[in-house]
Image 1 (spheres, rainbow, N blue to C red):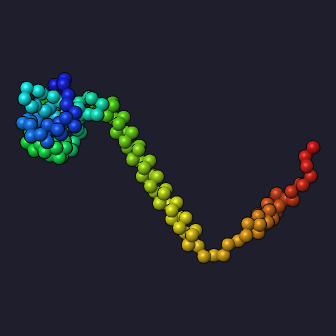
Image 2: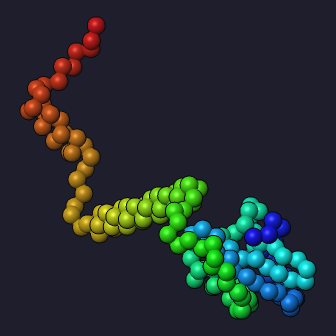
Image 3: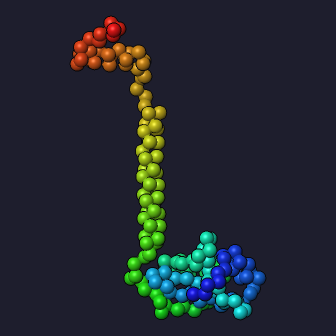
Length: 155
């Protein structure tokens, strides 16, 4: 893949301007990259941070190109290795994304449970018990188990 890169917004402007663009999808390891040829320039599509953008799934890449308006491209799968292990960075990203999704799912479940508990309390029609009555009943139970409370101050 070429060292020079092109970012998404520049590619979008070229496509919108009707530039004669030749796209090539290049397999590299377990992912896919895009090389854009226009005029004499040959550039790799870059991610936000500047490194070459890679797609793990060909379908995602094809949708990306189609959304840009690029529907014809060549595919070079010579270096594509579908069973090659993802890089350490890719594994970390996958693990982090998986953990974020798991936490979001757990938070959504907790939120659903909590809202149901609040709604149940709001819908409860049993008469309210005064606070002082509840406290007196609890003190009686504690005294039954522990014994009477010593009210003398400690010296």
